[in-house]
Length: 482
Ligand SMILES: [Fe+2]
Ligand SMILES: [Fe+2]
Image 1 (cartoon, rainbow, N blue to C red):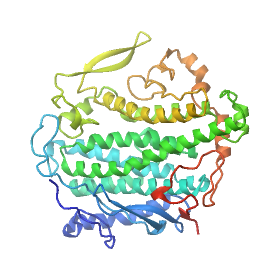
Image 2: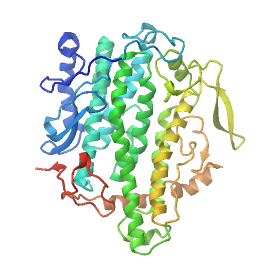
Image 3: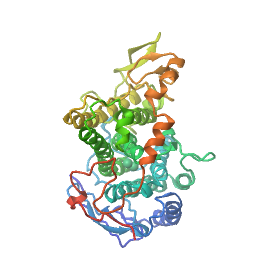
Image 4: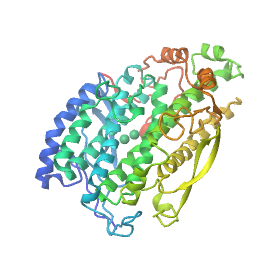
């Protein structure tokens, strides 16, 4: 049973379904933060877009069957709301030492610091990705893609609101300070960088953007799914609704890369090139060769793997036992949800060999979440490979081994090839340009990034989508540039 679905009122200064008008203290704090957020959006959000009218989906409720409406919105007028999934009556804590107890509606004192840190780290990623994508619209390969970029951007902005709501409502003065901090750090800033590495990397091209949404937004999805199981009910409700929006980000990534692959394969077929390694001939067609796509996969997958943190982590064990952060598929697991006696297989390097060792399951929760991520991503890769094989080209894109190119975790001291071979530092470096893009690969990709802003037209290196957003026809003007 759940409470009635509340429609969102967009006449409110801060649209919401949390009955904000009856919480004067929270309302005041958020209204103070709002102008700073808008200032940040202007300064660090999508560049030169304020006059554009974009066909966006806006959340109007949280009913899974109809939570959004579509329409052209002037970017400068976009409104961010606070939305929580409905409260589930009688919900109990699904895991950890409090399993079976009623969920918390307030922050338990003993877990305050832990929760605050989790909210800040999650919250920090949301504005970071918007900053990373700030300049992409200038080189959008179509209006359709430009619209999708903005859709992702505004929703990441809303996800920041979601975390700020929790911080400000439940963490008093500390929470308000953290909310300010979230607007002060900047992606790749030398003095005040974003907290996690992948969010300080550049997103210089649309290929990077699609890979980012495929891999890095998927990390976001995994983290949110784990937090959606939380015994702290407001966090659970917040994350459940965020995950709903995240599905579109995965879609943008998977179909974006898929359309690039399709275009490359079609161009190769038309030109009767069957040898994928003939990079010069493929590039002469103005498309992105498959080996370069593989290198981008290697990069974005490995940088994203680092986001899962140390494979073996006592912090993760603490958060689980406390009932704060669960597993990806917690409610579908058929174990006791306490894991005190359980083990989990973890890969590591011993004597220059990758071996599997059984570790206490509680300590291995990050490792498990990473494995769940890899499984989730491999479905998309399979669909990419279908596009290639349908065109009769003998090439397969593979996810790199999880130990490849790691800066964090149990592989960070090792040199692992994408295939999972343990190498010496020298031979890894010697092969680096086979694993990751070289400067000339990047220069080539960058040379393709030119705007294609005519309705219904697409840049030469990417195929058009099979269906339009909201079933719109091919020449629909998703963005009125004005
Ligand atoms: Fe997000
Ligand atoms: Fe996202």
